[in-house]
Image (cartoon, rainbow, N blue to C red):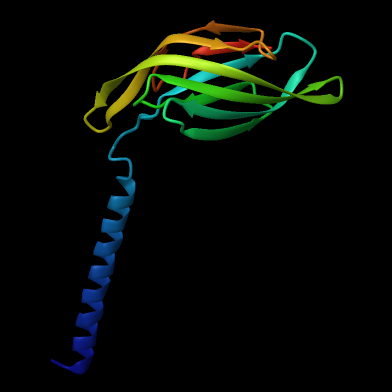
Length: 168
């Protein structure tokens, strides 16, 4: 065997290894979600509706649970917001800090949204496994800014549908 044929054989072997690695990499990257095409997350979706002359410019929310956990989320110019509930508790209160505009002047008003719920595991399918869904037992909001709350759906699933409407 000549030195030239040894080099050709080694290059051919390396090309094969590189091709195999590329195929393996593409296969693994396409399986990042384990074949699951559904969202596994379940959120309490709230629609925010204006009934007067002012509009909410921004909204900050802190989730306070029975065990003292806190989570902050912020939304600019919100017309809807999603709240994350904890599956290992039955109660979450959200402090809602609203900055609103009234004919050019900005004001801040805080409200509290209180949710009592039950959580239960729900089997989605073989690829996705289980998710946690919720049923709202009780929900209310203080009436500093928000004047009413209506429940559209007590069941909180991964379907991304509006559960409550908060009117201000």
